[in-house]
Picture (cartoon, rainbow, N blue to C red):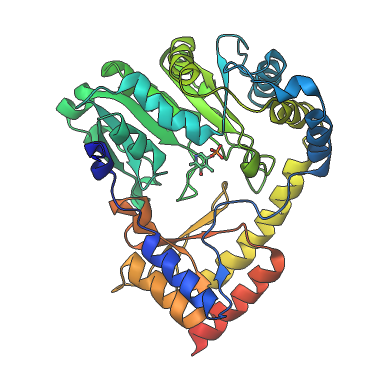
Length: 387
Ligand SMILES: *Cc1c(COP(=O)(O)O)cnc(C)c1O
């Protein structure tokens, strides 16, 4: 048996070592409080589940779905974008449901990247941007997200020959893992840059509804010229706590969406229809759960960030997304410090370097920890610091 060489190009999964260590400690009966998981701890709102249960009984939903998704779902997505962002989409040409946005993000590379082509990818960043590029035979070029630039890429710093060889640029705001946000002015700069170098933009926006202090993150598609050159990936995962149901969407440029449809229609058979119908319910009915979730997350953010700053782990207050990106003390690597927290305080976090070279020097705390566990975690951090 001979496996394809492309598998060797995938870098080792950086969390393997840490995850193993956590598992060993848990096997020994140690109680580890994990701030490492970016997955909502609160359940999917019950009315969405009830809708899903009913839909599961309908025999029409027991058959193969279509890759394009139900027309009703595409219309519900378009309606939601119009109500939320004032962006008007053609539900037949500018909307495609996905089996979670990660699936579409990975497959989009196959629409643009030929062997040797470049994709511009944020560093630190969500790993599927670069892994999709590598699996398609291309090369990621990492755009550093520096704190002094508010974790926005500096387009001027990208060498001309790289920009000219690039086919695709990935952006993600509100950002995982830094918690940074971007305004329409930034998106317009990105569009200007992309036009100059004839490349397409993919904006990944699953956190636009997870925001605090009254802030409302914009959609990339609100920026002028966005639809001519790019798409936006969105998801029900973070908005409605539906990560386990696997449903998301891509909206925007019709040519890009058709290209992704071509790839997907040959690889998957769409999203289970009962889940599509539950998504229609989520998008169309009251959006009250979003504000409820954000109140809880904001309270957790405020409690945790106060303690982190007290114990010398400096972090900016994120306006959106559910992560705190904290600086590790001088003299530690992000992995060393993650291990220290685990060994000495029984607290698990994610080492920043797992998101790219530029993540070195940082650790990520996720706020998706129950209020009880958060309180316990805070006590442990304070005691640990006091020792
Ligand atoms: C959670 C997340 C997603 C959403 O993934 P789904 O596949 O829709 O669940 C996409 N991008 C980023 C940056 C994320 O953190």
